[in-house]
Image (tube, rainbow, N blue to C red; front, side, top):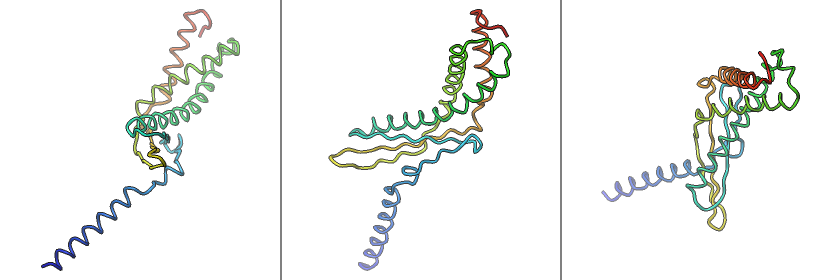
Length: 171
């Protein structure tokens, strides 16, 4: 009977220690963050925050991960907006400052509309010296659920209407 209890306790402790190692192991995305791509229909963002309060650090790391995704989206969206603008003949009548402002406004509006679709997938907490911790967050946006082209078109059209009403552009 004692042997059976001792054997069961040993097996239990072995499984608990194995699970603890897996949960505490540093995930590969911390050191080698995936970026994804528009072609892959997924974009990842990674954020890190260091300090003492894990709750505050989780929020800060998540915000950085979302910003990482936003920056990636903004580059792609800006290219689409510039392409649409080149096809608009009246756009060429704008001066350089107006055209850059137009592209920036439409791109930022379209990018920010995508951010509610960002999901923070993972967190990892790394213990540092003197009680400090580093919290890593990995966020993801599934581009199959985001209609980026439609957002760009809507924001593009809305901003053209504003410029038209202000007398700065006819289209």
